Length: 571
Image (cartoon, rainbow, N blue to C red; front, top):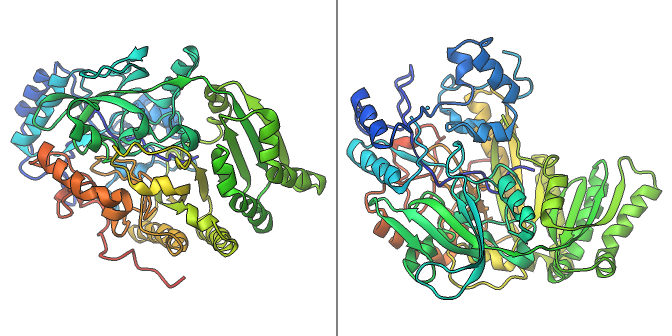
């Protein structure tokens, strides 16, 4: 499964890109800092400054058969290996200058064998030094919470009290470098449940959490931002701040949905820990064809509101549905999921290719995750365009609406195969009213993603075509849904994290129209005020983030942003 929340944000990384042969230097506003300036910064942060370079650079500098390149080739498609490299990304176009044909260090994602300055801060003073350096030199900052081996601490306190508050709650504190695979293993060892993402390499405290954070348990247990108890963050003025319900409440609000790497560099986050839950699970799979997929998605749509009320969450593609429930028992789960179970049995009795039906129980979220995480991971080592949409409860309330929804889903999947339905909206979880994530999440059932991939040898026009393709694909759903999108959030110079007009920001169309409404709804005005309060010099900037500067030269490697959605033929 591709990342619902692309791993972004929370460690401050200084990124300097050398001028290309074409003379482009998109990340520089002024002159390139001297070697002495870099040396001084390296000394200031205790020697912890690394070159932020593309993952495959050794193959272009040390030689294709060098030991360094052999190591790259063997792990080119390994998402975990990539998250251990400061300059690497899961989707590789963000390591390149897309608008220049040859400014890239990419291998063939179909077969990688066919022929850093980054600062992992270990303390708040390092981050403050990075901010000061950026202010003095105009070197853009990139915030990324994976890519280092630092900031990996995890602690569990069953009676955690946010600083300045008095009410204890069960909480787990994560340093900014912790990833979900590590977090879930810790939760299993402590017999607790934490709500997180569906990919092991995504960072816990970065863009996923600060942009909203959804997962298969969110229907009944809330979004990530609903469960944050406290952040420890360095703001662009160099101040180390603690944000919770009792101090720096406005910053706490901004960090709970406003987007990662936008208001500061989060070094630590504490989230609510719940008791371990037993999961009832129903899985139906088959070799997809349009007729069977329509049947499957009709069943999900016809029962969507009922299933949400009964606590189900999960995922579906054209050939599989995986539904889980943390609050049911075997008998009630079987009754609730009977239409889906009977559909699976019918496929098996008819001898449909690949048909399987599984009704089972998992003793915990961690055991479920371990079972499925290796099979459903992000697209790794390839470049792709991605778009997404939140689907409102209104789309499930009448038969004509459900029919229109299923038809739109099928059309989108046909246009860009690989559509994923994430049943991850907090539809049964009441809002606290204290988060800045779009309110569209509360009235939605589905989050839909579509992708279009290309390989290393794609031309500039072919790349443009893939972005156009996903925009056209998601238009099938834009036509039947209101403006609203989900922000996972990033502050990446060459990265994008988005969701619908209700779109996920880490998974939205890079050229999402009306993005302020789509990502934040009514919260945008207040978020912009807070952006100007905590980052008046706009040291932190990223594509379509709160208060972004679309004229910034750092976006030279993005294709031009149209005033309207990328042009394409009528549907």
